[in-house]
Each structure stands twice: as C-alpha cells, then as structure tokens.
Amino acid sequence: MPKPISLSNRGRNAPASPIRSLAALARTAVDAGVDVHFMNIGQPDIPTPRGMIEAYQAYDEQVLAYAPSDGYIEYRQGLAGYYNDLLDSNPVSPDDIVVTVGGSEALLFAMAAVTDPGDSILVCEPYYTNYAGYANMLGLGVDAVTTTPGNSYRIDPADIEAGITATTRAIVIPSPGNPTGVVLDEAQLDAIIDICTRHGIFYISDEVYREFVYDAPAGTRAPSVLSRPGSEECAIVIDSVSKRYSACGARVGCLVTRNQDARRAALHFGQARLSPASVDQHAGLAALQTPRSYFDEVVEEYTRRRNMLVDGLASIGIEVERPRGAFYLAVALPVEDATAFSEWMVSEFTLENETLCVAPLEGFYHTPGLGRNEIRMAYVLEQEKLGRCIGILGAALEAWNQKH
Image 1: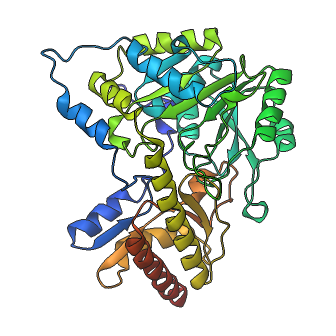
Image 2: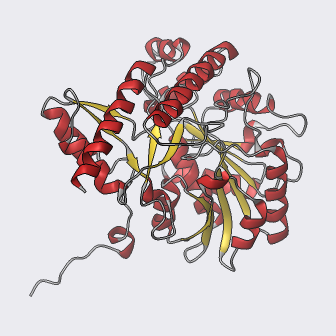
C-alpha cells in the first residue's frame, strides 16, 4: 500500500494573508462587471518618479547578468548616502548594507540571522502580518504586546520590556506603523534600544514608510533607529523602494546593520538565493536622485486623503484617530464580525455597481479574539474615489445591520 504523503507542520500551519484574503472574491466581482475599489492592499496610485521609469527604459546591456549577492556597489554607495543624510554622526557604510528582493526578503533575512527554531519574536499588535508568516516559516513563536485605539495605538517601551520572554530573540516594530500609522519618537527608540541592549536581543526596525509623516514641517521623516546612539550592535533596519517611490513591482529592498555578524549572515542567505534583481537596482539607484519636492507633494496628497477618509468616516458615525504616518487606517466597525461583513460587501453588495474591498484586521492580531470588528483601509486611492468608498461603506453597513 502506498505510504501517504503529507505536508510539513510548517506548510500546514502557514497563515493566509488577511491583506489578500478577499482577493478571489474581489476578482469574481470584477469578472462580473462590478467596479471594485481596492483599499485592502497598500498599492499606491501616486506616479512613480520619472527618473526611475526612464532608468528601466534606458537599460541596454547585451547580457542580463547576475548582480553581486549583496547588490551592486554603486547602489549600496547610493543607499549609504541616503541613510547618512538621516544621521548626525556614525555614518553608514556600503558594507553595512545587503540589497534584497524587496523589503520582505530583508525581513526574512533579518529574522533568520538572529533566531533559531524554537525562539520567538516580540511584536506590537496589531502588526504587519508578514511578521507572523515568516515566523511560521522559520519555526519561531510570536509574542505580542497589545496596543489599543483608545490610546492611539501608542507603543509603551515598558510594556515591550514586560512582554520579553526567555525565548525572545528579537523585537520587530514598524515605524511609521502598518496598520496603525504610529510613528515612534526618538525617546521611544532610545528606550527600546536600551531594553534590547540590557536583554541581549535584536531590534528589527521596519522603516519602509519613513517619508510619510503628517502634521509636521515639510521634509520631516520618521526618526531612524540608525540615528540613535547605542544601536550599533542590536539594530537591523528593513527598507524598500516599494512605498517610498510608489514602485511596489520593482521588488528591491535592503537590510542595513552595523552589526557585522548579522550582516554576514544576511549576505550568506543572499548567496544562497544568488542575486537580487539586476535591472531593478539600476532603477533604484536612479530613484535616489528623486528631489525632496516629490515627497513634499506626496505627503501633502496623502494628508488630504487621510483627512478626507477620517472626516468621511465620522460623517457615517465612525470615529478614528488621524494617523501620524504611513497610509493606513485601523477602523472599528459597528459589526460583530468584520471578516464576514467584508466578505459579504465585496461579493454580494453593490452601490451603483460599485463595491469596496478592505482587509479584516483580526489577522493582524496575535491574541485570539482581538480585532474581530476591525478592518484596515489603505488610503491609496484618489480623493474622488475615497468619497465613493465612504458612501459604499456607509450603505453596506446599513444594509448589513438590517439583515443582522
């Protein structure tokens, strides 16, 4: 008798992405001729900098060859210059950087470099779901410090320290945050660095939304852990061109750390996957020449969108805090089961042949039961569409509550 073939526990337990969980239902709606507005995924509609597009168009090599496993030196030099513009001292070197296939690979390399199976990472929930996805892939546990909308999702370093366990090897926190928009200030960064130093653990700082800070002077960027004294041994930064330059399809990111052991491990992982994309690095290098005025205009536009969405939600009876960064809102709905509501809305409800796709927030929490009535909305659509999305959501909630 043939022996049954089974998946690994890792394969069986791999979590589905709540960000993309409604994609099949949305595609069915689109195929049926419904105009679906996608607020479930952080795909900006802001134009990519022209210089980046032109770099792709100008690429004219005879052979599309492998790049070095840690990325072209010219690109790493350019990245080092970008990071050093954030720092007052202790500059970053090109040899502190490993170019990766998107920020996601940088996250995977960082987590793999500092943990072993059976270790755990500490996150602040609600958190970016890929942290749990990669933890499952690496055989890691996840522990969570809960933040709440009642306290503006503020991250308290004292709560982080209290959440550390005997198996904690790294703290993983985005700033600006996804899905909350929280921006850590320098005092919070310093406190977390001190905690990591005293406990001998790593601080993986996800900084892909650094440019998107609101209600601040023009040109303000979220503080980087790289700029803080004492971060040399414990800090690993995750970064990407995807959101900064509205270039999600480029799939080029990087890992930055002054800890040469961690950098060496990431390089060895990079050697195993051979090479980051060659052409995308040329485009990434061109993107580094993007003038600050581009980001000033983008931040102004996202600020208008944020305000329109927050005010629009208030007009249908839903109050939310105005996030300080990134381009997401965590929204508590007047329903018991936001997942069921979101599935129904995108698959069965229309308003003038339009509907809305959002991300249920329950999957962004580690603690069972939390986020059950919440969704994430990405304000990556132009304002006219956002206005229609608010109308769709309001009408859908009214119809849903009449049914239930």
